Length: 146
Picture 1: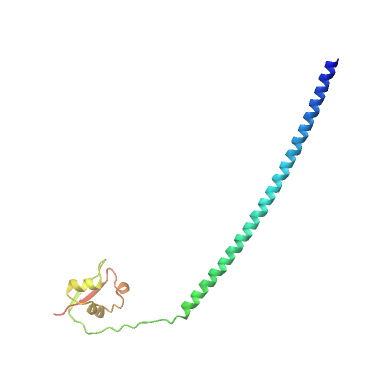
Picture 2: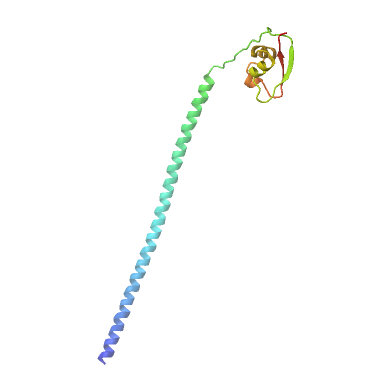
């Protein structure tokens, strides 16, 4: 009987210990769930704060950029426009030949190749700026002195 009593006492003690352990597990599980919710909430608050700060910085940068662009635009507007008037001379040989400009041609190269001068070609064809006014496929007159 004592053995039976001791065995039953041990079983009751083990069952009581299991209930305590289960209660602790339940309490810990609840605490973990609370911590997870708090972490998610803190994470959301942090994300919102970051978005607000980044938006503020972007707005500030946009205002600075707009101000800089406006000041550049004002500076450009206030610059006097410079128009250069090029006077072409009629002092070039009236005899010569036509030439079709090819890729890679320059006025100096054309003049050298045909025995003329850059100035004569510019005056005869009214070429103020060779880089703009001389186009591939264009036919120009090359003045050549006889």
